[in-house]
Image (tube, rainbow, N blue to C red; front, side):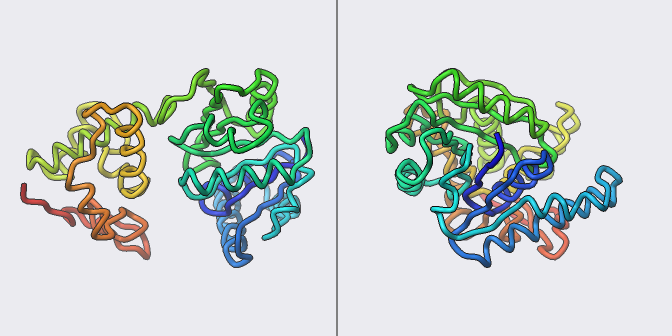
Length: 297
């Protein structure tokens, strides 16, 4: 493993690029517009500066790490990569189009991975002629801090592909779990999304305020962050989309989203990134203004 390409330079893509470059790998960071790619580089620089300030990275390592990251908007630049990790929008049609293009562009030995949190690896892989070399590599946000990567098999993913992905995961300092058969949400989100959804039902049904729900889970269950705070941090649009994937796949009513969540999405309440979700936020410093969202059931 020498060269890794990351498609998408948002929070996730930038984070994956950063940890790969820190591990000494040559990284290609690609997005549709150079301005977006440069924003990703700014995110990486800011992360490295924080590490230097904390004393977890030597200052003279920063330029070496950045020098290992090459930026581009041309998809053909990733053709000789050993591994390509797609981290773009969570949309099946978009991902299938990208993987079909990658299959045509990339060398035969290239492993293709998707950072999807809920979509079918098998369906994505079916858009290629190398489904045995396609897998899910689900990183967690923020990538530099979160140690877990879920390695997810599609129906034709080979054991060799999983072994290569496992070696890469360990090389960049992460721990992996292998999901032997794809299922929406894999392991973590299969448990986490219904947990947050139930908290949304408690709020939407008028049983308690967001502050009371989050305080109850932090003090009563020892959780570092309440479920509604977590939903706001992830993004309510992302939570809503993931829950709908579960509901459509399993046809189980326990996965249906509460109408208040759907209403918030229509209003543009996406959580921290939009300034309002179950709480209001000061976007400049992301301070929570408690009691920002109310709903009369």
